[in-house]
Amino acid sequence: MSSVASLSELFPSTVQGETIKNNPNELGQEDFMTLLVTQLENQDPTKPMDNLEFISQLAQFGTVSGIQDLQGGFSGLSSVLSGSQALQAAGLVGQEVSTSSNMGYLAEEGGELNATVALPGDATSLKLYVQDQSGQLIYSGSFGATEQGNLNVSWDGTDAEGNTVAPGRYRLSAEAWIDGQNEAVSVYPRQRVESVSVAGDGSGVLLNLADGSQVSTSSVKSFH
Image (cartoon, rainbow, N blue to C red; front, side):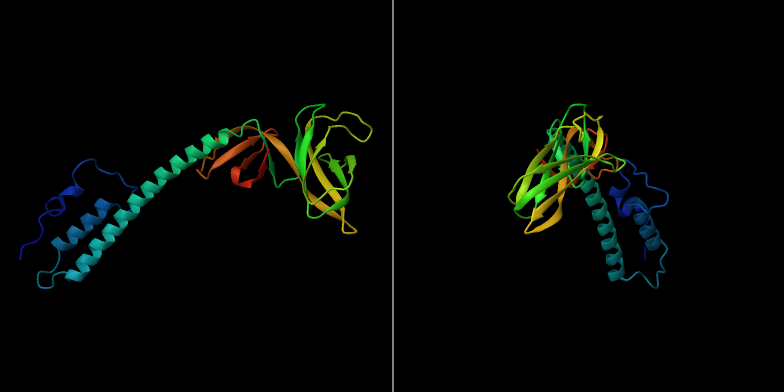
């Protein structure tokens, strides 16, 4: 019974063309085939490899090869999608976005800070509060009866005495009188998108906001 002479005779396509350099800690396609052919060359002639076992090993090789091809394909697709997302996100530059944070940013002295108040029901009255980063209350404003839904509000960047405050980050909160009870309601300040960038780990596109923070597009609640 003759044995297989070499890897190139049994599977010539595995040794033609450019050599793929694998990680020394990983078993690549060529390594797999080398081991398989070596096993054939050194098998006991009186107890040859079972046909089913041989076919099973070839099937494993095909599975490994297919998975590697899929990984390469998905990697390429991911790059294309990231590029497409970046182009789409670039259209948001200059616009305002709201996230789940209630920290707003007053970009300039004498400017305004816009926000959205989410009312779970019709309110007979509404109060908006503004605190600095130390937690000190610097402003409060009252609104009349307001229907359920999203209410757009604006703070003019002044304190309770009407003095202009310095640019920076401020915390917004609100209370509404709904169904005879006073309850806290969500406030979502808006921030300007200054630029966009692609995350280093390839996880997606990041929006660079006016206060220097970064948020993913998936964390944006609304665009304005």
